[in-house]
Length: 218
Image 1 (cartoon, rainbow, N blue to C red):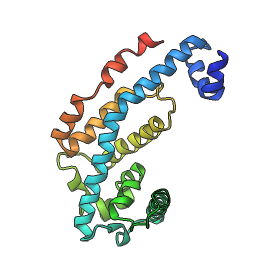
Image 2 (image 1 turned 45 degrees about the horizontal axis):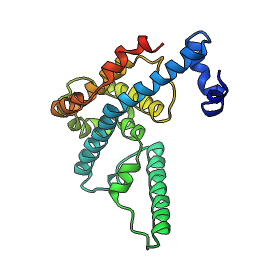
Image 3 (image 1 turned 90 degrees about the vertical axis):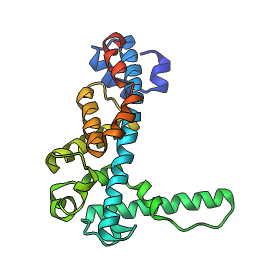
């Protein structure tokens, strides 16, 4: 690899791309750039599906428990409670830093602050089998009014999208993933939430063009 590539991208980061193209440095760089383009193209639909799922599930649970901070009374397991506590700590740390920089008193942490900091993985986990009778049956199925399938199939889609989202956001390789299948998962979830939402997101989605150009990239 050219010295500047090793310096600014690192050999470990480039190794998966080199393996994929049989060790050709130029082809590896082209594949790396395509990976960036694919991640960029997937960011928009992933952004929408994460926000929409989060808010739909939160609204259902607020209605179910009659309070905005529903996590304080809902029967979350230890892992769920830990994620809520972690989100609160992060909110408090963020607020301390903002207050320090702006030289003002710290404001109280709001429910919206905590909701924003709860991870996509936390929301997806609310659809696991152990929560079937606790959350899914009494309330969370209402978050997906256009869905008629099984809870576990929807959870599998969400779990796969959480993994993809994390790889995209951490600049990891996705070129060897079945991105066409992931893209279909995004729209299955969006359609389950709202066909109108899915239509709006699809109108701004350029992923298909990027995927079709993969062969030209390397």
